[in-house]
Length: 99
Image 1 (cartoon, rainbow, N blue to C red):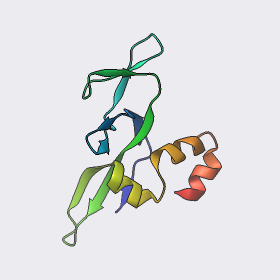
Image 2 (image 1 turned 90 degrees about the vertical axis):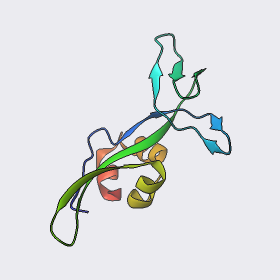
Image 3 (image 1 turned 120 degrees about the vertical axis):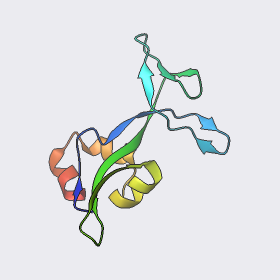
Image 4 (image 1 turned 90 degrees about the horizontal axis):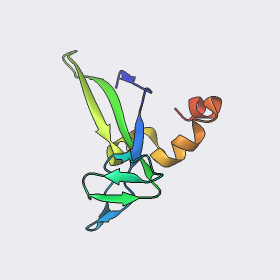
């Protein structure tokens, strides 16, 4: 890993269960205080956070690749859940210490 972009590294995500997993697809504000998940096609009053972490990787040949790591993989890389890291974004010094 040569770089992790901290610009827009998480998004508001659907908290609903979809089968045996949480949906975690991006939700959009409806303007009436609720949020719409286009994947579940349902409105929610609260949302969770999910990672969409942009990472630059360099392979052994020196080739640079840009990839996006989503929730589970990004959480392994960052060592903290997106919802926990979002809380820390209020305090930039605390966020920098974790990262």
